[in-house]
Amino acid sequence: MTSVITGDIIGSRQQSEHWVEDLKKILAPFGHTPSQWEIYRGDEFQVEVTNLEDALLIAVLIKAHLRSIKSDARMSIGFGDKTHQAERISESNGSAFIHSGELFETLKKQKVTLALRTGNRDFDEKLNLMLQLALTFMDSWLVQSAEFVTVAIENPTLSQEELGQKLGINQAAVSRRQKRAQFDLVMNLDRYFRKQIKQLTTS
View 1 (cartoon, rainbow, N blue to C red):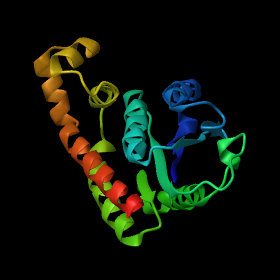
View 2 (view 1 turned 90 degrees about the vertical axis):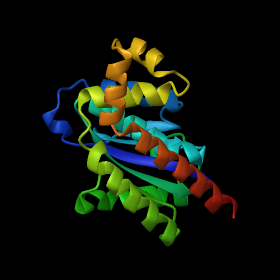
View 3 (view 1 turned 90 degrees about the horizontal axis):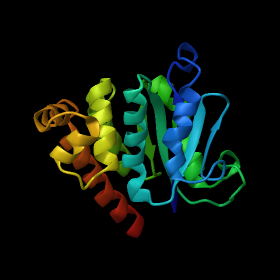
């Protein structure tokens, strides 16, 4: 079993040229390109996340990174198997890739920026409804909130004070940003998702 995030940058043509370099920096920690992640067709990208439980948080992290540079992405997360490993991730195959690709094609029509598909209808319906609710605030994260989310996800063990040092703000300001970003809610959703995907794949 594996998971695949397929995404594209929203309004990439209206953005300055350097967003491609920004996106490369964001994706670099997730493995080697082009076998584990790749940017193709100008503004589309694909990332394989082999630990299924991390898939949602990584998608949220990519979104936070992009929102912090006044950009955003539409992303679909597909779960399943990998039947063919190509040199480029965009040429690999399996149900994880099919789920991710087919769902991605519907996102624009659904006016949704993040959704997932496992092939289990009940699971997908429940989790996607939760995601849609979370997107009501995640889609409007401002730069400061998005920066906070990025640093907090990348440094899960740091205290508010230590996060403040990284962001160059005091603890009270950290607390305000955490609240404004609804960060605790995001982490609760992530915990719930991890539990559910584990049950789904081990049952």
